[in-house]
Image (cartoon, rainbow, N blue to C red; front, top):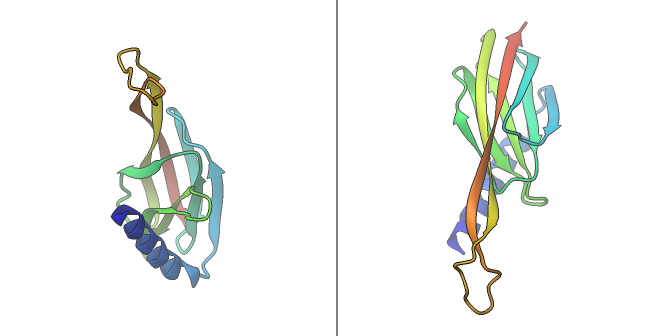
Length: 137
């Protein structure tokens, strides 16, 4: 229960932080996969957003180096995640970000025979997506 309240507080803070943003944004929807690589070019004052769905958690595995914002945000209304990147002022160059998407996977387990269970064990599956960001004029 405490974790739920923590997530709600984080989402509210993120919503307040980004609700007033009027900068141009590039928004891309995608599902993470183990061999996914994305190349994107933005201007130095532009925000890049990548919408991710179908995952229990999305974390930054390798962080960008030159950012004002580089984070994943949970959308409470539909359970999807958004990765947000905004370069630091004056930065021009390339960035590399790696996202890790994790899902809970039920694995059949014949050794579990408890009444009322579905005879399965929990396992986790993680896939990675690399985002290559070119920040230009």
